[in-house]
Image 1 (cartoon, rainbow, N blue to C red):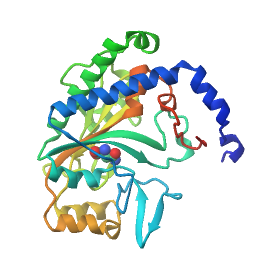
Image 2: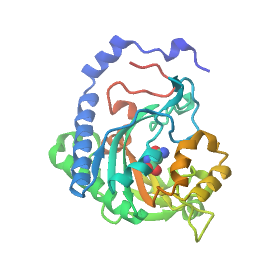
Image 3: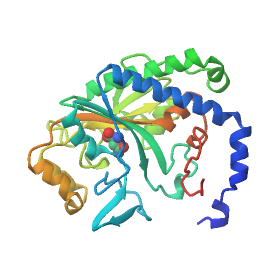
Length: 317
Ligand code: ASN
C-alpha cells in the first residue's frame, strides 16, 4: 500500500506542467475534434443528444469498490453514475436513437494506476438504438471512427506527424473475431496480444456469458455467449468500446441477475419497468473519449489526454 504522502499532487507543479508540456494543449485540441466529429456523424444519422445523468438511485452494477460514492438524499439512496446503460434502455423508448456525452465515476483500485488506460472519472460517448442489432451499431461506430480519424489528420497534420505519424485510417468493415477464436490463437492474454498483433481496430464478439453484466443479451441460439462486443484498438492500445444487444424481458433479466449474483432488490425500480413490459429490444455501446484521444496520439497514459485527470491511486486537482 502506498503512503498518502506518495499519492499527493503538487498543485502548482501540475499547473506548470499543463503550461509547459505541449501534450496537454495538443491532446485537448484533438479531443475537442473527437467530440465535434462524433457528434456530427451521430447527429447526421438522426441521433438525439441527451444530457448526462451524474447521480441516480440506480446505476450500472459493475463491481468497483464504493468508497463514498453513495449518499442518501431525503430518504432516497443515490450513487454516482458508473454508466448510463439502464437509463439508456428507457431513453431509447422516447427517441429511437440517442447518445450522451456521459461522465462516469468508477473507483478503480491503485493497481490500475499504470495500465495507461484507466481513470476513475472518465467520459464515454454512450449511444443506444431501438430494435437494432449489433451489426447496425458496428456500422454507425465504424463511420464515426473513420470520419473522426480522417478529420483530425486533415485539420491537425502537424500534431499527428509529431505524435503518431503511422496512424492509419481504418477501413470499413472492421474485422470481427470471437473471443473463442482469439483465445485459441493467443492464449490467456488474448486481448493484449491481439491488439499488439494488428494494425487496425477490430470487433471482439461473443463474450462468454459470465464475463459481462446482466443487461447484455444472451444469445438464444448459443446460450454460453452474449450478443455483445468490444472494439479493440491496434498497436497494443486495447479496449476502445464496449456494448451489446440488450436483455429487455423481465424473466430473462431476473435469470441473468441471479447468475451474476446481482441483488435484484437494488434494481427494484428498473425491474418494475421491465415487469410492466415497457422495455424493448435495443443495442448500443460507449466509446471512451480519453482512450480514443490516447490512441490517436499514441500516448502512454490517458492522464495526458486531458486536464484534471483522475488517475487510480493518485490524488488530483
Ligand atoms: N457503455 C456500455 C454499453 O453501452 C456500458 C458500460 O459502460 N458499462 O454497453
